[in-house]
Image (cartoon, rainbow, N blue to C red; front, side, top):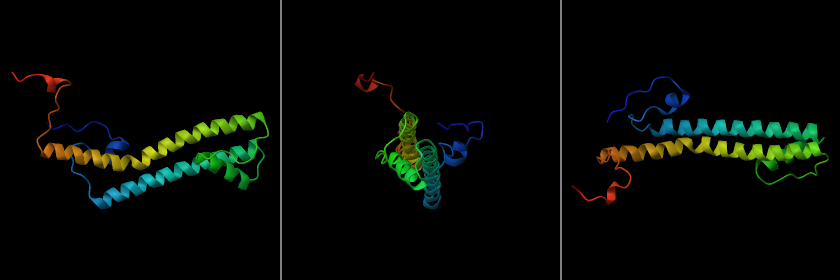
Length: 145
């Protein structure tokens, strides 16, 4: 069954293409992985900057101590310096939740091209084997008519 080309030109369609296309060559794939990795590094740097500014302004830490605390929270290790006020404690808790979300997003972005390639390869293998039809749920237990 040939799928029609979806309308619109979203970033996902420009970056990954459509289901009927062949797998891209390794050079393009490595470029895609590199691009996604750069995006992930950028998000981590932005998250680190937010934490540094917060620790510097709210907890009155030096920039180097702010960097240390923000990087420890962002990496999941926990704060180093004591928090001096309730505002600093609220910021640290919020920043810890934010850091967890950033971590999950970055993992998704960095591993998306690899997962996409694996799924695309599996789909092409199933088409080459002639397994394009998916059985209905539970139909494997029914006797042939």
